[in-house]
Image 1 (spheres, rainbow, N blue to C red):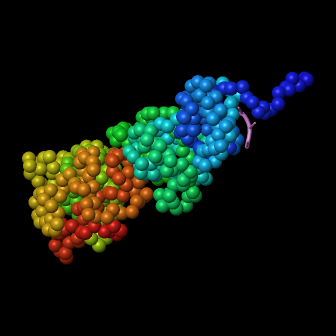
Image 2 (cartoon, rainbow, N blue to C red):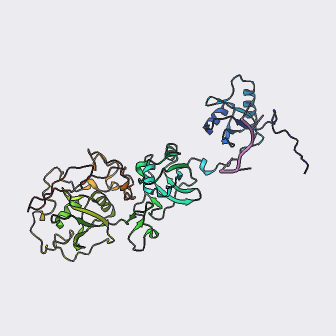
Image 3 (cartoon, rainbow, N blue to C red):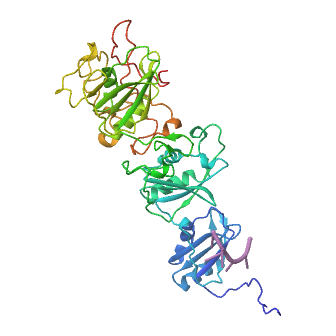
Length: 448
DNA sequence: AGCACA
């Protein structure tokens, strides 16, 4: 083919166009700065920056050709060149007649962010860690995660584009703080653009997606393993589906733990409806039923691993039961339905100083309504709850990522690190004396 | 410092 191209690559005089081509821009240049640059000469109807391999070119499109001519004419005779951020920019008529707006969704500010987590161990970043990181900028409505060729990605939905933008500006290119990640995993860098989505569809709470606006959303059946009991988190930890019934096993039971003691301890978080105690594996276990899941979640997170008695005695291990409503045949010293306690006589009840309900022997500081709404889920208490409720006057523990795995969506407004202190803890009973229901002081390092 | 295909 004979060459038919005889036009020089560059001409010093371009045919006028309402589109101007700019070069030698700083790469930080924004579309807003382009608008500011063109505004004195007319109505800027479109811009495009970060063009070209070096991302240092741009286009400005005016509403009218005369406005483009005005700008070119002005700078052609001006002693001051056009500048962006102090850098001289060169401009000429573009050889295009309009900016073709290939604005991808990534360029349009929206309330949903597309987050790519970069790093060898990106997949090990849990959805809870992402939730914590992004919650610093506002209420996170929903998160979905997925694998694409780009790697491990997440969509993070905020209320509005402004909040999303503040998160994007602060986090894009930054790495997730090390203390939020399991020790063995490498650095994880966030790359953030806008997503075209405005409202994510989250059908289930799972290790892949969460809807923090709807704590009652069912747990994904697909996330439940063969035993039907656990879901597996991204971090490989097994997570149980939440339940209003807690299964408590008691370790190092040097002192008798009575049903009344359990009732007192667990009543700190809300009304206890039923308790059933039984022996299993040579130890004592108990099922504690609350009216709702929220209360059980708060109780579990506050009490797990802590001891009923000071000094490491009667350490509680809590999990969610698969029961939702215990069947209490008779009220006795091993099982009780507190709704029936006024009707059905207590059978075989051991005489006990603690036998009188409710909650005797609160010898130290608790206010009269200590067991009340103080530790209720925030959506029942209202927001904010810090001033009146948990951790009042108590320095919250440092952010504890290990607790986040359980920070399921039940309390969407709970700021991180503000879990309640350990209510209901008691000093060990004196020798041969039933337990004293005194409150142990809060200790940030927990009570081993 | 010279026209976009993300």
